Image (cartoon, rainbow, N blue to C red; front, side, top):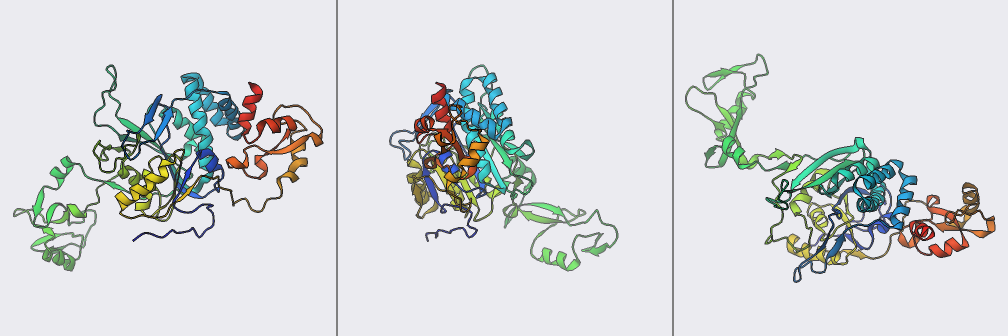
Length: 458
């Protein structure tokens, strides 16, 4: 049976469940309502200095992206905008550029501008997982500290991505990825999840077996209590349960009777055990092998099991999950399987097609997705006055100086402009408005303020 689309009842989202956007995720996120997402998982480029493409003939054929970064004038202008929004983030990126080089600085500017939007989108009870590797993980940790607050760091999770990986002859083999887990505050959603016991533990602890299966044993005595003991089956002790309960357990075959002279214990069967509470080093979720059923040929595809663990731990049924670099839509499929709402964004239109193929192959059903290429318009700002009515206030704030060329002009020679144009997710709210002279307004056109400044400084 195909699930029905469930529109949210709280009215805080301005999109439908099961939406895939094709386009620049920064522009899309700028058009999304604040405080509308419960969980974000992102698997962005890693600054690996490599280019990726899917094999011809695979389901993901045509998926390609460049993971090489060079600093340009637009990056520098965006870095200046970051200085206004988050001075700490500006300093972190600047220091990373000094330590590692221009490529890392460009990469972190790209990530920083997007993470600032993600923070705005998350609810107070929300969480975010950033998937990266050791190439930039240490810099991204500082970026996340600056954006979300060092006090909201929850875990650095290590996932063993390769069983063996001989990528160099003069260092240890690099076999792991990193997930940086941050919350929005103390009220973040957390559900305890479990990983399977390893075989060595099972051999040691579940060595008993009967017709119902393997089992371990637990005490029937309450050693921490004093008094209240009684005799059962010829044994006087302080029992955890009343005699009627002990008799019932024994009748059901749930009491382990050892050799004569030993104390009986309760049977705990392996199929009743939840497993080990999940830890911050993930060894039990294997990377996708070449012949794995869920593999599509997408160059950086992650296993469904990994995303299901994250989504199960950090969201509730019907919560909204966002993947702003959704690629082959693994997070979207995992969210669907766990009865969460989801939205994905990717530059490639292939993501929308892949989520439908995976729904049929891995869920066994098809559902309607809302595939969009537009930029959403925010509906959480209330009814705004015409943006031109702010001209007098802006003239006073800017003291008559054009925000582009920095030249003073009379009131009549300045026009109200959107810093981020509406075509790229910018709204009519006051914080997105500025005054430009006619020449700068014409030069900026439908571009961003960063692009204008880059042209003026060239």
